[in-house]
Image 1: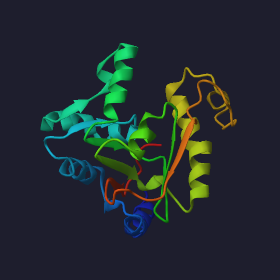
Image 2: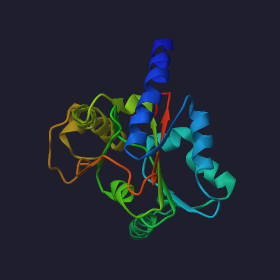
Image 3: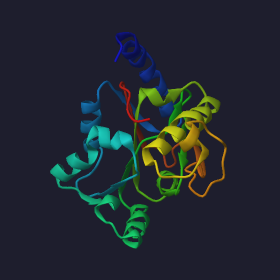
Length: 213
């Protein structure tokens, strides 16, 4: 990472954390991915059942492997191949104790913006799990909710569709959002989270590195 970018993250990150805290999120800033992984584990009681949403950030951090090493009971949809069993795990995850995810964007005034295809990730964010841990690199921080919407529709969603590859949407073919209503669209549920309720239920870890898309 360029030194000037790192410096910007170190200056801006704590300010975004303050904004998140004013909106009742339990938020903190860490400089590195390694610190973020340690922080995640420290926030999860040993007796909690843990699950997570599909996220490049989780994979980059090695969250799943660390939870396995620590002996946590997890609900992992990727351990099953049967579609019906996978669907059942997704439903059970909505009532787990701790749910881990990233956020597609975070505004400078302390709000989260997320887009989902199936809706399981944003459903867990809104209600169900006792605790939700949101981990996001500073590359996800934007100036306003309008910019958050634009970032996700014009950048994050088309990039994620390239990861999936086999979907039939305009952005797979062109790399640009076509504002489609395809049955393969991942832009189906759009959730803006202004505050955490109850206070501190949503815990946000901002990381001074580029993580995810």
